[in-house]
Image (cartoon, rainbow over all chains, first blue to last red; front, side, top):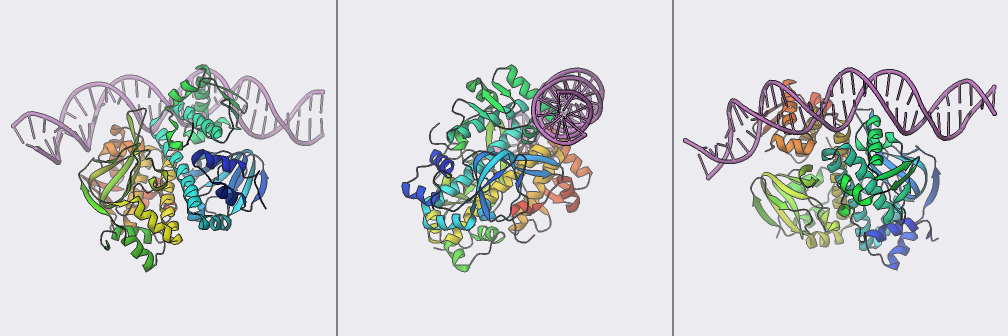
Length: 242
Length: 242
DNA sequence: CGTTCTATTGACTCGATTCAAACTAAGTGG
DNA sequence: CCACTTAGTTTGAATCGAGTCAATAGAACG
């Protein structure tokens, strides 16, 4: 059974990062998967769990988060279509954070065993999937820089820059506009600032005419200006073309 | 040529995380390496570089850092003996941050080719080394939680807790005391706070009798209290025993 | 023995938080 | 179709954690 169309975004994602042979692509598309639909704000996996499947996003957004001090939520990273949000559990077996949908999501679940079997046959694909986990790690490293050194405006701007580049890498947000069901509280928990302050930052971004943000639609008005305000340089995303 | 004694800390480190067969251990110890000595504050690798070797710490500490806005330094993570600080470049080829010694360091450089050859022969060792890169990523994720949600005192306490646990995992800091040539400015750049404030935090930790800190010697006085102040739970380090 | 780090202290400032309240927009059910 | 909820955004005022500036005091080093 070929899951070509379902694996389209993943193949697109991998292609943005590395050259894949037809054979590799077929090996990926041959993996069995189960597609499931989720509503907004649904927990897909919980901290401490031992998942048996990896979760590939076909449509929508996920985020990984963890509680500090038992109550303060920190969002670690957001994930876009084509991402496998929990690829790292393949070798870590226990999840150290939760995975939640941001708005409605279509996700494909691939058994660990299927991925391991596929990787066992191809050093090249092992390299590619290992690399994917390392790029996810690089994204988190860059977020450490943001949280440690950039002020609240730069943090929010940086997050928007990153998402738009990652979306474009898989063929979305072509016009630097995209739909994402972020509440300001979500952004706040990612940027490590309060909701009230997030609101002020968003207004400031609008005032400077860097972005438009209406409901769940974000449109970038001034891409260069936004990157400058964000101190954003996309190198860490390891994209081939850009 | 067997580098048994030089590879002692690495084997110890891997053993803390996973069971290794004798065969695996020999395969690791057979890898060629070049040992080099460094002084304090020396750059071992620079952002943008394409290293051909991985850097295994035999003695001393390294840290990875990156500049935000061209001038503000953020320390991403510290590395202790037994760590391979830049294992991720094996599959990422370009370094997105710098690596610097914190005080004098003895390091072993292992050619990428040697590691790749070794991994090609053993799916088990591929798993172990992949896992190592994922644990490094988990450490950075936890640091995101600290920077985003914990106040300055908890951050500094968390850093100390983590280092002491990682040292103990490789047979160091048995008595919850250890020598580390941190300046308060280093801590500040890791915790994302100013040096002045770092000083006040350190004094507060002393005042609460959680730690003693004289010169480069840190002694934990109240391990439970420190963990509580830090909101520290070591699960994310993925250690087998603890 | 001066030079250079590093640690420490005080005063002032500022970015961000907190608390509180008002204002939307979008359901939901009678 | 309108009251009633509920979730999310917006605004203002008071407060606080942490930054900045500046000066001093030790410690380390050549």
